[in-house]
Image (cartoon, rainbow, N blue to C red; front, side, top):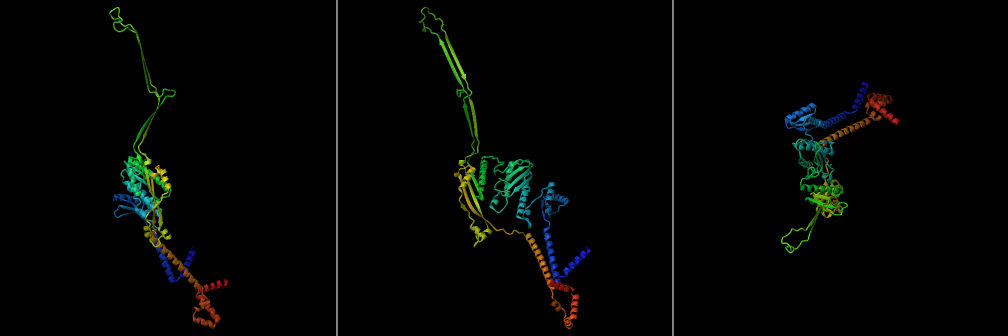
Length: 532
């Protein structure tokens, strides 16, 4: 092993001795520069990055958190005022779990985490960081201000920004779960939804859902003016119905790919009066012919009397006194009562308030079709010949009216039930200009690129110098006999002329003794020429 090491060391020394002093100086300088560049690059890349863990309110709280970090062995930094605590970026998740387990809420992502990115950071990575930042901001900084909310979890879905107007007009989605400790009504949930929509930049709260940890739905996001989808007054009912109509119209029109942006404004005529209607239907019992007899009463009376004389004294011829009447009489009375029970069908109908009168309702639709024009495409197409990009945008900024297909009226009518004559659709075409983007390279990225270029340049210089030195060695090796003889002293050449044979051998022997390497190279050249 020692022999091999010595042999290797000898080869290294032999290789090193081939260079001149100037070449050795250049190699040492280049090697030192490369090593220095690597050291700088390693220092930049391996530098510990600290991120914000917690902004403490008191020094006591900061001291307790520092004790936890020291116990867990998490590297940290504390600001001069002792309130701002930062930890190693690679240990951030561990520190967050440590604080959560001990009842402290970590600060989480701040805006610096979003905008800070290295050379390898992509736009997609920044978008994911921004989503995480918003989730933690809404949950920890905003919702936590409600005294009745103990904890909150927020899950967001942000539309991908691909540079088109459709993606920019698409609203974000939010799902919020609240751990409630106190009174938190559905009205509070509606107000919270409005605030979250404002933070996200949404025009409506349609895509926001709020629940509590018991599974109760606090806000469903059907419309802006209702809580849990239930309207409380006539204006809310009308607004809810119109929002529903607008949503359906936007959905069907967006599917036609005729518009980039759609605005819908329905005007519904809603009857809020209630109507009660009762109907009685009667029919005779099966097998009866009396009809619909409710009741019947029959009364009958008969009377019979005997004949008597003429009133007065004409019949009393014999006596002068009056005798009692001995004639007889009879009387008969009959009374009948009938009460039938006919079939009866009773129908009661109640018309609730809120019926839509479609024939009196109307709807208006305004659509815009955006034509995307990129600065690079405009240059390729020759649109910027003789004008600047700003001048071209100014000259083509006006939108133009576009004829609407008649089928779109039928689409809206079938989706809403509103007659065609009550539907108005207006369409415009507008140019959307996209400026050319720069390289988007930060100062740290420029430093890293410069270091990489310097390293590559130094390595290339070393390779070229090495190739040049090898070329010089080959030229030195390919020496001819005439050159060697010319390099000998003049007096020796004179000796050769006197005694050609013996003196030549002596001179050759002397040359071999004094320059063994050159003689060996000369022999190699002869052998190569013979074998070639």
